[in-house]
Image (cartoon, rainbow, N blue to C red; front, side, top):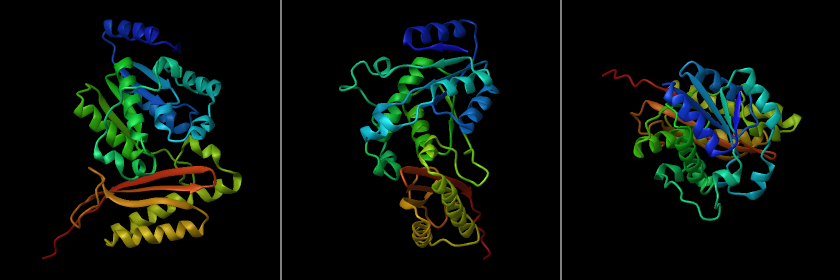
Length: 287
């Protein structure tokens, strides 16, 4: 596995592959890799000739300096995992490489859909995400980029950015990889204590219960959300939001909307957990 820490070295390798007419798939990460990340890399290998993974803890998407400092960094283990799945190139830039002037940065202006749900709780988060993803796309110049669906809103915003700004990149979203008890795999799970880890799977069970109730015919979404919030509070969670939304634009669904997603964010101790379930319901006309 080739490791590049500079833009020049990365561009030289990318140009070489392009001269050989090789297709490139890209998996951007912030490191502390788990089985969910590796699943993205393995899927990317089925789509292109060469696989590039980036590890960069992006400061512009953190709204609190202490969260940026505390974000887990496991570089040696990450490199071993990427080598084990035969990643072709790891891009490992420093903050100075990515942001020569961090205090005065041109940023991507994100759409209104970035200001709800996760965006409402984390001001500036999606502008930081969109900006660093755009920079990485320009550097790596991939044909394909692979993301996980656990960050459902993020994936939707990246797709809109690619369409609106005319990036010639296919965006592939893969289903969330879960632990045996349903907990979505996440780097932030490392913040959970042993007792909290046992409780953490309750988040998935609660939103999956909402899905089942909707599929069985309930459409009182606000009541379902409030019930789930109360249930999670009883289990020791501090809910931020649980929302039933339309998949295509994350707006509040109408009674005839069939493609839905349940999105949730909660605190459990020091860990902020997010999860979602996307599903479809059929509306039958018995008249």
